[in-house]
Length: 55
Image (tube, rainbow, N blue to C red; front, side, top):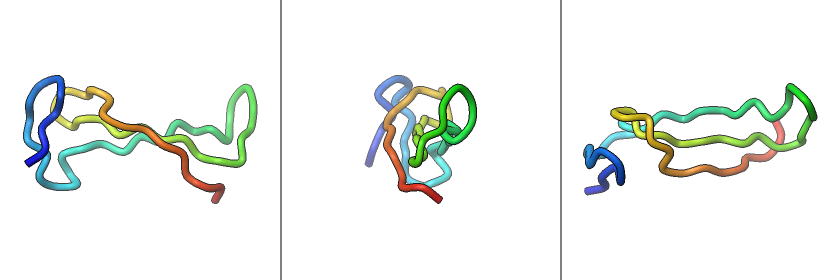
């Protein structure tokens, strides 16, 4: 079983984390890739991040 490092909530289902798109294609500069953050759905602590290819 996986637990949140901040609040110790169990993460057994995909619904236990929140996928946040960092909107890297708008704003000050444009990027060809999308940046994302995975956060605990219970406390909001960041538990991972990554980069996805352009859409």
